Image 1 (tube, rainbow, N blue to C red):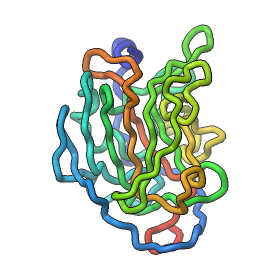
Image 2: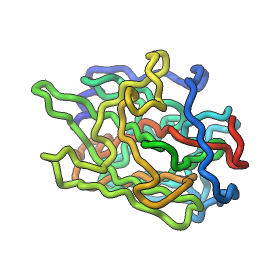
Image 3: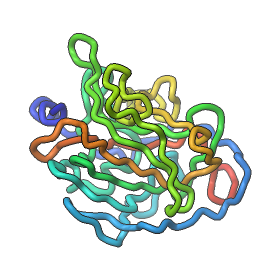
Length: 252
């Protein structure tokens, strides 16, 4: 399992809450601006879930996830749970093409986590609207070590739209799944976490599921990854809005 190997080689990344944030694109997609509060609020311990969402307190307007709404962890999870919610909020802490970050939350086999954007919502704009960052890396020999998750989005937290995820198509690079591309952006790297051309991670266009706006993102481990110890499966680093607007329709 990739993360277990990384733990033997790397030190955990430091806190990133005070790092200056790069600019991001804001577009106006029209439509209703009354985003719902969600129907499944809650965070969990391993193996279960509860009814109380967690966030990092008052945060500035930024393009990153603001709140962990719910989580249910599968077998071989545990890594990163002691750093919730901050470990999956704020910018990505990528380690580049050939290494995986340790600033992640492991979901375990079939585990799931739902996050909410509260200050800057996803809208359907030009091209990629959402970036999902895991800790995939390129192995010696050229192959990408990927641990996959399916991505779903919702505007109200009740009705969900699933992006296609070909979790068994290893030869094709698991098209549509998150966790397939190394992450190049990290605080201080100078690489924008909201530019799909350079940031790394996996990009999603709301138009592919017929939405003009989304407030919630759910990641679900596909159950087809590496599992062992307490760092099994998909390892979430961060989410970033590429095209977004304020809940009232304004721009930050």
